Length: 121
Image 1 (cartoon, one colour):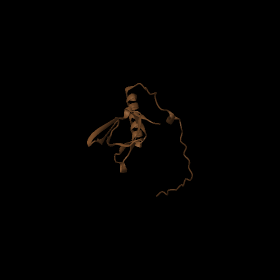
Image 2 (cartoon, rainbow, N blue to C red; image 1 turned 135 degrees about the horizontal axis):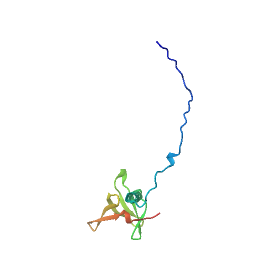
Image 3 (tube, one colour; image 1 turned 90 degrees about the vertical axis):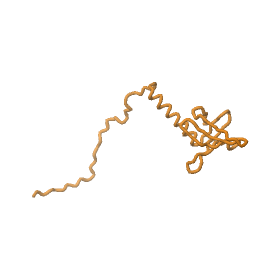
Image 4 (tube, rainbow, N blue to C red; image 1 turned 90 degrees about the horizontal axis):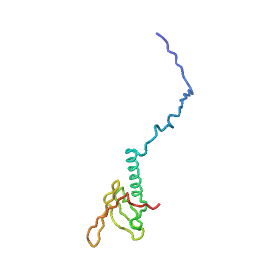
């Protein structure tokens, strides 16, 4: 039988060679390609949707409104900064928000296009 010798290594430092590949973004991006245009649109729609859901103020017909989310992640309502409650929201899509309100006992549907909203900064 052969006897094995144990060797204990302490404080061994292994150095990695860095050749700066992580800083290379690859080939240049064609910003006019159909894919890049589609990705930019999607990023814009996501940004606008996030602004709306967070409750940023927006203008429609020279009046300022704001979305108030409901409790526990439920849909909320749209509120005017001047007059108060405007309508309840029952759908929030990627580029469209649908709501409803009652005027003289009749239900009135409200639809907002998020692409055309002007957000107040």
